[in-house]
Length: 450
Image 1 (cartoon, rainbow, N blue to C red):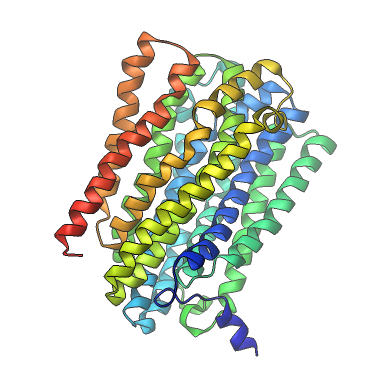
Image 2: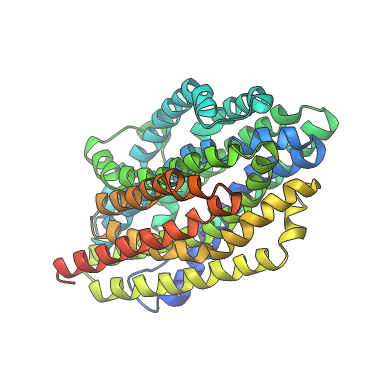
């Protein structure tokens, strides 16, 4: 009975209808990502409500910096996902165990390395983005404490990728749900009871991240033989690591590039002062929620496509592209509409300062309401990675985000120096990037004769 229960969480992606399975796969993944984002959102809400606008600005000044590390890890987790899914599609299940143990070993080494690198760069990054001097000290404190949880964030995301590759997105969701509740409770205790302010919310996030990582390790240690984790077998198998990095690093760089471009935009936001920083960070949380849905359907596209591409079911890969695109845009637009209609009540969860609220509403109406546009290039990029084209979407994304947004900041924004003009760079860059990545998808698919 126990063996049957373990296998019931896996999904057959190679046979049967796709539309329903894509939703069953992607929505729990989206909810997991949203809950993970709630770690930082809870920090913003608690400090904004109980520690004041200065503390809110200190946390908000780190949103883009934190995003660089988190998005890098989330993007890199695409590598393990694609490799395992492709092996399953090819029927090479005997190699999966070595991949699993390589993933865990690399998570330990890579997580510690990124944590150390982050601590070295934390101060310069905050200064470089023009963080106001009145919040610089507390912003640096939050960032450095937050970075202590990077190894746990990497472990959770990479272990989730293992389960995701066999179609299980529910148990990572349950782990994140428990950890998210713990995070909120610790936030309230540390800030309201012990008056720890920014330090308290950062520490609560770190502890919650380690809790979610611990859950994932425990689950894998009790899995069936193909993906079971045995501590004595944890080691890096070079050939599998190279395959994972071939796919994962470009995907991670693509995700990180968005945060890097956000840092450039953050310098523009900082020029409007602490109130703009606080308002923008409050609104940004809702953008992350909607983008998590877009990203989840893209993850669904890469997982389903990788298995079917490995099995040689190319017609199903074409269907997956369109299904993921339409479903992802639909669900993302629906959540964006909800946030847009009730924008003021939602923003009021984070702050009661009217000036901060006005900045937040400006960002929500011009950026978050159009978040469904991101699905266009996300699904196209995911489909390219499943076919083995890992660098193409990464390069095009650099051009469409960093390149275009820097050009906007140096030209249009300098000519019309308003917060509204600054926010328009997001939807316009999405459209520009989508045109390039979608074109690349159809050209390279035709080249492969699919």
